Length: 148
Ligand SMILES: [Zn+2]
Image (cartoon, rainbow, N blue to C red; front, side, top):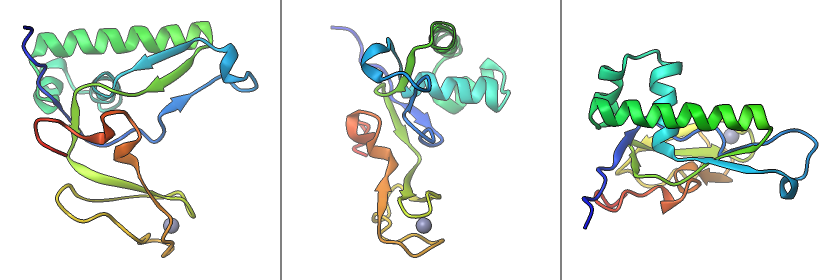
């Protein structure tokens, strides 16, 4: 039996879970899926400009695993960009450090500690229409090993 992949530490969920070319219905588009750990590798290497050594530590994987992840992620993003595909972010082995909520009234994102109760009202506008972003990406935002 293959060894179970270690779940990876994510700083936070993407601002949205899907990108698609404007004006073309989804049913006509090829879909490219990147996992959340692949997404996080792009954040660490290309957005935060960390070297692979430091990024691997942050993600909780070895350097060689990190390099493979970020290469795969970049390739998938390139395919989506060049071929005009829908790019969807979902699945993977991961757990979040915090809980993230988007207010469906003012669309701001708020966070709480992972062990805290869910946010029921928006700290900015007071709306009670809060959406848990951790549940948007497959596995319901939960790491099976850590239980959240
Ligand atoms: Zn709000």
